[in-house]
Length: 125
Image (cartoon, rainbow, N blue to C red):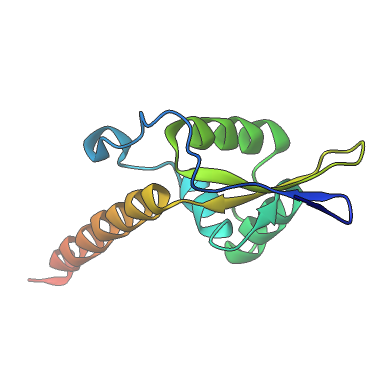
């Protein structure tokens, strides 16, 4: 379907599912963690870069090469999908996290929470 130069894509059509083995996918790189977080709502590449920068107060700002390499990897693993694509010449794409991507994200969140709980042991005398 095309509406005002934007084509909505069916998120149920998933690419290869080689990203379902949780043990192989964790830990995430910090960039991948923030990219997944940034596509919890439809977002395009430049919007992802901006949001990651805002979330980290400028500490992490993925460059285009890092961003699009990570996006390609996550598309192949089925962690994100293309939500919409402009049909104009620029072909701006919006990405959205999939159910599998959410599973990976929450598994990483659980791992990080465990890490922080264990870090508290450093305060014990």
